[in-house]
Image (cartoon, rainbow over all chains, first blue to last red; front, side):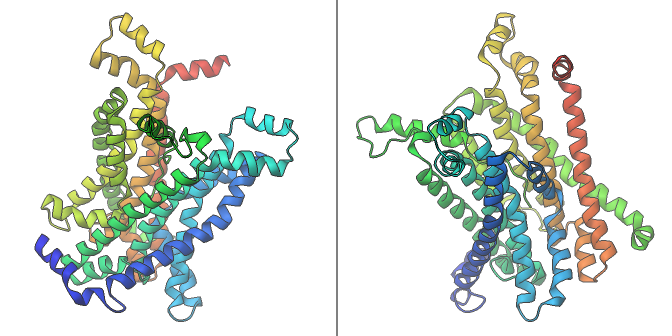
Length: 256
Length: 215
C-alpha cells in the first residue's frame, strides 16, 4: 500500500498541469488566504470594538454557537442556494470561499476579544492616567497585550479553513481536496492517501509558520524574550520565552 | 416537514449512529487523556513534549486523517473504526491540555493539605485534584463533543453512514427538507451532548452551587 502511494508521489504526470500537485497546492493556499483575509477584515475590528468598549459581548457567544452547525451542511446549503445564481466556475468558488470565511470568523473574533479582555485593568488605567486617548489606549496598550491570543485565534482560523477547503472539493472547489474526493469516487486509494498526506503536511507547516510569526510579533515584554540576547545565559532565556507562549497557546476550538 | 414525516425512522437510525460514532471517541479520549494530562502536569519537562505531539495530531484535517487511518491501522477504508480512532485522537488532543491545565491550576496549599490528611498518589489524584479540576475539564469536554459531532458528519464522504448521509443525499438530489433535517439533527445532537456534560458538571461540583447561593 505504501509503495503505491510512493508511486503516486513520484509519478511525473502528477506534478504538471491543471491537476498537478503544484497547481492544486497553490489553489488551496489561494482559497485559504482569501477566506482568512475576508474573515479577518470583519472579525478583528469587531473583536477590538467588543473588547475595547465591553459592548455587545453576545456577538462572541453567538459566533461560538455557530460552531455547532456541521461544516458539511453549511457548505451544501450555501452552495445549493447561491450556486445557481452565479455563472461559470465562480459558481463553485464563491459559495465555498464564503463558507470558509464564515467558519474563520468565530475563532478570530473570540481570539481578538479575549486578547483585549485579558489586558490587566491596571495597565489600561495607567495608560488613561498618563493622558492617553481611548484610541491610543487601544493601539498602544490593548492591541500589543492582546496579540498572543489574537494570533492564537488566527492559527485556529487558518487550520479550520485548510481543513474545510479540503472537504469543499465535494461541491466542486479546486485545491488539494480534489485528490481526496476524486480518489474516493474512483476507488483510487493511492491518490486519496497521497492527497491526504499533502493536506496534513500543509496544515502542519502553515501552523508552524504562524507559530513562528506569533513568536516574532509578540512584544518581548510579554514573553520574557530578550531582544538581542547576550548569549551567556541564552539557554535559560529561551526556556523563559517558551513558557508564556505555551500559556497563550490556542484555546481549544471545535472544528470540522 | 413532509420529508421528515415520511423518513423519521431513517433519521432516528442515523442519529443513533452519529451518537455513538461521536460519543465512543469522547469516552475513550477522556479516559486516555487523564493519565496523559496528569503526566504533563506532574513533570514539567513532559508538558511541552506531550502537548506538542497531541497539538500536531490535532492540526491534521479530519478528512485527511480518516483516509490515512487504513494505512496506519491496516483497516478497510469503509471501516467505522477509522472514524472512531481519528475522533479519539482529536479528543485526546483537546483534553490532554485541559486535564493538564486543570490539574496545574489546583492550588498548592490544597494539594499539601490533602497530603497532610494522608491522601497519596492515585488517591490524591482521584479524590482531590481531579474533582477540583472538573470545571476546567468539563469546558474542554464540551468543545470536544461539539467538535466531534460536526466532524462525524464528514465521515459520510468516506462511506461511513450516519447523519451526514442526509446532508450528502439532500444536496445531490436537491431535497431541501432532507438537507435541513440533517443540519438541524446535527445541531440538536451537539446541544444534547452539551446539556449532558453541563448537567454532569453540576452534579459533580456541588460546592460551586453552595458558593453561588451564598454570594
